[in-house]
Length: 263
Ligand SMILES: Nc1ncnc2c1ncn2[C@@H]1O[C@H](COP(=O)(O)OP(=O)(O)OP(=O)(O)O)[C@@H](O)[C@H]1O
Image (tube, rainbow, N blue to C red; front, side, top):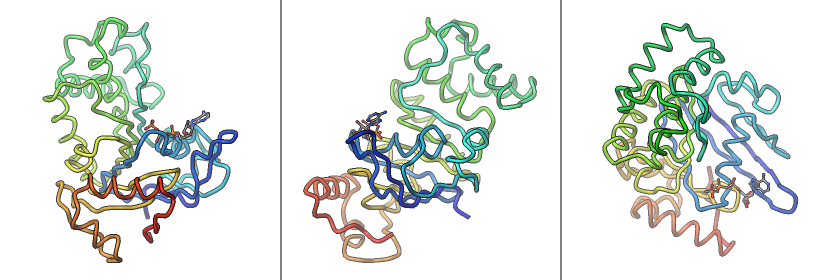
């Protein structure tokens, strides 16, 4: 059973069609990159998959739960790292993690032990008792990464996890994400950053105009293995870099005459 599926998702905001027949499926063990330009529909898809927005039509399942009818159970089971979200300015990281631990039904000792581990992993131990308002953007980002993984969820949705982090921490987070997905979890990673996707993702979906217009297997180590079903487009993709694939499909989509890859 796939960890995440979305079939035929449509969503409009007034006259703006954010999603138009979005289809995507992610299995356990995958670090799936969701790659697309501004306004392509990535955040809207994540918000539907995490029960924050109701689609106009289409079916979604996350760990067998329907986020449209059971958003609370969905959010209980998954981790979410939203784009550009800050921890509460009036709390310290330790207070915030205690709060997150409570709503995640974690024992106090479990929270304390995991917080220590994450503070060491990301290098913010000295800031655990500093108000968030006095932390840098990067330090706040480390806190947000920690809260997403605190309950060790089987599925994690991440919007641009590496923004504001220094190169050493970026590398640590990337290696952590690869290892976490490999432990039979699923990570859904939305990004504009093709190099990051190429570096760590097992597979990417390229999104434009509210739908997934192409997919590419990367073999999990930045390799260039192509999909097993070899139509002309995927054969061509296997010979191109991810950047070339991305630009080709997005340009095609913008011209609105792309032959959509069969999925
Ligand atoms: N709450 C909203 N009200 C109106 N329009 C919205 C809303 N949320 C998203 N949109 C529109 O829906 C489209 C898809 O937006 P979405 O945020 O899903 O794209 P995205 O791929 O995440 O973009 P980015 O990479 O810039 O974050 C855009 O045209 C956006 O302006």
